[in-house]
Image 1 (spheres, rainbow, N blue to C red):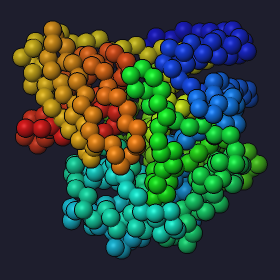
Image 2 (image 1 turned 30 degrees about the horizontal axis):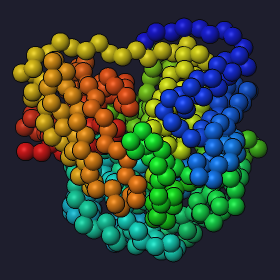
Image 3 (image 1 turned 135 degrees about the horizontal axis):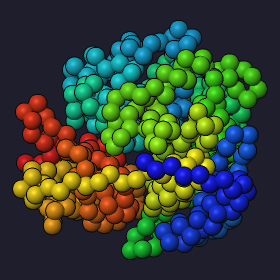
Image 4 (image 1 turned 180 degrees about the horizontal axis):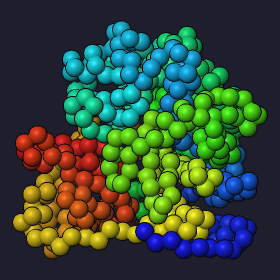
Length: 461
């Protein structure tokens, strides 16, 4: 890691950040971007581009975007409020609160705990998306449908990103509070933090300025349909918000558990526990409860982000430095813009530059042990690594996304990857440039899984 200093005034740096944003929007064909930056006592927000190509309105700092999986941290915040009220513990079995809970694996059914839900180690198929209606029983019906979910990895053994687990956590919130998930979150998190422009229901969103999503197909943004998510997915990714509210949320989690108005919402100990490094989560990071934690250049970063149908969100904090940054975009390629803006902010506001690890010089014979086909559940995407001139090359075959979107994105382009430690690699090309992944071995010592982007893909025979 390298460290530099940019001693220019904040306003000058913000002008440069705006220029970078505009350039990346044009290069990546992103229709609209909103971002917010909190640095000490200073706050900066921006809105650029349009909410929609078909019915364009200017994006502002108050434009609503889907924040996707950053919602999981809000679910976790509610869980910790219930823990402090003495109504559950992290090590409670899920069945203590949902007696009828069941997945295919008996051990997972009886032994999975609240902690397993929050740190993504439950092991069952996590990307399970199904429509259980828009009624108040949506989460209860989702839980019933989980009975046939297969285990991908053993309970508690491996971090693998799990949306379904957070819907289970949301159902626990409902049962303990006696309220719908949405009502409970509004009462326990959104209202105390004065997040007045954050909503779950499309009927609330449509009364305000909001962004629609796009997927890039043949180098052109194509409207991503449907816009709405299923109600049962609200605990794992259903909140719609703006960058102003996101910075309110960041300042709370960079603090000691009190709100801006001085109300004690969580103890300082709970805030610290949520951000404490736990299970290895791929790359150089670890998962807490439920924040991602990574130390870069002597600075600890606490982060999450989200991906919905055609929308991408980024959210990270450096609590010790009182710096937070969030970016909301309405294109699937927005994640590349997020990454490049994040690198710039970290360099120019914190002096942190992350360098790519040095590749190892490995023979094709060594690399061939890692090459092969790996399948993602439940879509059936195939990630196939081949060996070409001392590098691994990824070829992606898109699976079935009919349960997620009517507008599936194009497959990922071919990308080179270099091994930099045993069984660990880094991508060398966009859109995954700089992303780290790893090959995971089973009990027999042979490669059993690929972990990339948090997901674990099983190796195919």
